[in-house]
Image (cartoon, rainbow, N blue to C red; front, side, top):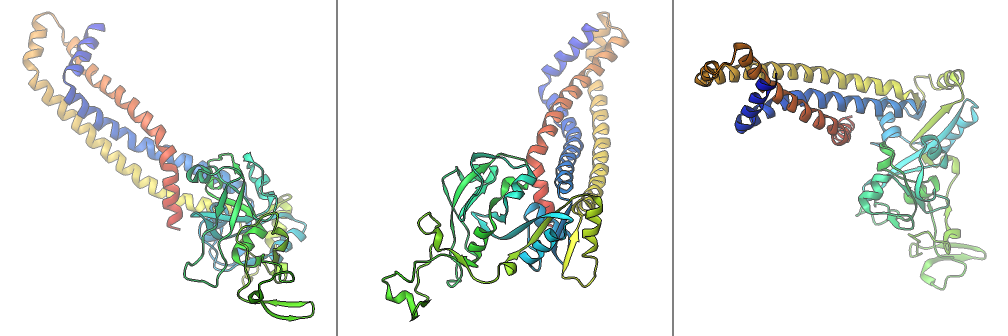
Length: 395
């Protein structure tokens, strides 16, 4: 066995161009189905795990897909917003623990998620640098956001203006980065988290400004009637929350009417989940409740259908590759006829020649399998997020 394999190796090494062409052809044929399958498996596991960790989502009536992707992956926004009264209703039902989300703004292009500290606990998010948001104006950033923007605890992060030409709108808020989250490999790595009140300040629902009772700027006061002071449009509003001005920040309106865009509900048990879902069964209700795992299963079913088409195409490519290899082998045997005759004259048997020919392709096949395996294993690390972006962008 050593003789034929040695001759096969010497032939493969001597004919580098031919060997390289065969190596590339076989590697690509093996790589495509392996990479697609492994990427899909990783993608499916990640999506299923995040959906399973979120039993129920409450939101405005409309598309179940939009609501689920908004609450789980911070993509898009439901057609209508809920209020804190809706979040309190879920909590006061006694059936579930509720975590409100308010996603209406971005910071350096990343979703700004207004929520509570319960969200960090439920998702198992760990602060690797600094501490969780503790007061108005604080935020914590996901690992990918921190890496991309070069942020550390103690830095500042500015929210994005909604409209550069809307001069009467709320000013961007210069938030303090209280902490950086440890990487999780989920959508949380790509988001910025802050307290609900901080997110409401970004929306202009709350604001802080100079003390009108002590200001010396007459232009800042519109009218003064005893202890009642009405500020003018000239009053200076703070865009950075500090210890010196934090006490001046306040909110206008009833807190129950303040907006949220989704509510994560964590029922106490299966019975509580059924009772809570029953509260939103009315077809004319402006509020709906969805089971994210069911929605994600429907999305993955569509992906699997596309995968079947890709598998069929891969099978066709593999068949063509086999025909190509057979043609190369036949042509090679004809071109090497005199070489084979010489080997027979020096004592090589037909079995030795057959093993030598087979060994040439076995060596190339093993090398191609190794290349395809390594490339296929690395692909999910790169293509997983790319696939998620394509699917989320098309929803």
